[in-house]
Amino acid sequence: MSLLGIDVGTTGCKSALFTEEGRQLALAYEEYDILHPHPGWAELDAGEVLNKVKRTVVQVAGQAGRDTVRALAVSSLGEAVVPVTAGRQVLGRSILNFDVRGEEYLPELSAVLPAQRLYRINGNTIGNHYGLTKLKWIQEHQESLYAAADYLLNWSSFIAFMLGAQPVLDYSLANRSLLFDIDAGAWSVDLMTAAGVDGSRLPPLAPSGSVVGEVSPAAAAELGLQAGTTIIAGAHDQCANALGSGAVQPGQAMYGMGSFHCIAPVFNRRLDPTTMVERGLCTEHHAVPGCYVTFIYNQVGSVVKWYRDTFAAAEHHQALLNGVDVYPDLFGEIPPGPSSVLVLPHFSTGGPPDFISNSSGVLTGLRLETRRGEILKGILESAVFSLKSCIDLLPATGIQIDEYRVVGGGSKSNAWVQICADIMGRPVMRPVATEAGALGAAIIAGIGKGVFSSFSEGVQAMVRLERSFEPDESMRQKYQERFDLFSQLWPSLKEFLPMLSRQSISSQ
Image (cartoon, rainbow, N blue to C red):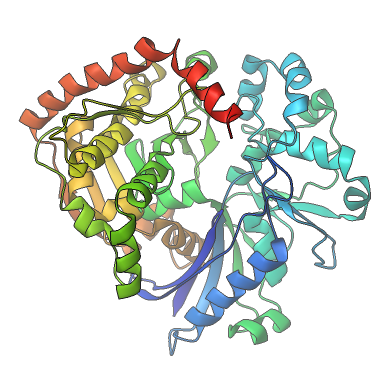
């Protein structure tokens, strides 16, 4: 028997089939495009994404052989929703969290939902990247669509619903709406009333791991699954990543190395709102009962892609023609020791604690003898330095990190993972399965089906560690000196870079 994990992201989806011992039987991946019908708008075509999710399921189900799928769960991107009818008709596109629509509501929402009040109920502070502002925009500007919709479903519940499940949303994704009472585990009437929104299209709620239905006969025939395959309530993708990495108890933190670099420390109690708000830190239900996570992140993974496309375009093109990955060769060029190039990675809006948006990226320390490998290593180091700036603020909140569990594409690089260990001064464990979102979803499926009696048992059965990267004390000291210099870059340049950023935007 096997467990199916489906992971739906912003630009691609994957399905993976695992045995109950965590052995991966099959994996399939499909990409799709973000649509920009107007400047600042960002949408997904829900029908297209659904079809590509189904294609990945068909591919892995066809490789199951005797390992019949017992249950499935879906992890997904956070805040975006899909409007649907009770008859499972898709009514429109899904507005993504970085879409500018809804910004106009922020002043009034900030006035009625001040940071401390909102945080005490929901665990977040106001922002246009959450679902609330998009919900207000849909209600005001897409009235006919809203009237026709029976539900606005986050992506995990949408995919499950279209396969035959009830329209049920898990706690971690509900939290991304700003309308969820994190302590009560229910939609907050107080928050809806204060925000002036109609919550009638929001679905029922359940913890991750709850049974929410079965695969319908029609979907089963289309996908190559058995009718009646159990569908389990999934989770926000970062929570599924944490579960799939084995980060399930306080002292552990998932370190995701994708386009976004995201550290998700685990803790087991609500923390003081004042200290969390001051550091820009959210509180969200983990997929694991009784546990919470917060997110410390940046987009430096995208800066590595910029480096590839700017400094190594020819090599990348040739690698694509040869059907190989260019990154091993590029990472082979990085020199030993800290880079002579120090990078301020403000190529896009940053994460906590400051969420800096009015800046620009900076490369410092360039000389005629500087090779491109020095630049790449400076970028890799800056990814970790940027996160360390917030990690160093955690002790005052009560959050402790003793070890990291690293996953995602960047985690395949031994050099980059070792940089993480040396800069953070903590062991970094790499699981065998670095695509942890689908594995986390499969573990959730096993919990809901009763294959495992607890999340800890599921992790013990399905998560295998491939290697531990221990911090090198001499390198840690050298990196601390570089980090001290890094910490001075933004304060030294913050009067100048916003002006440069505005000029760059106006010239486009």
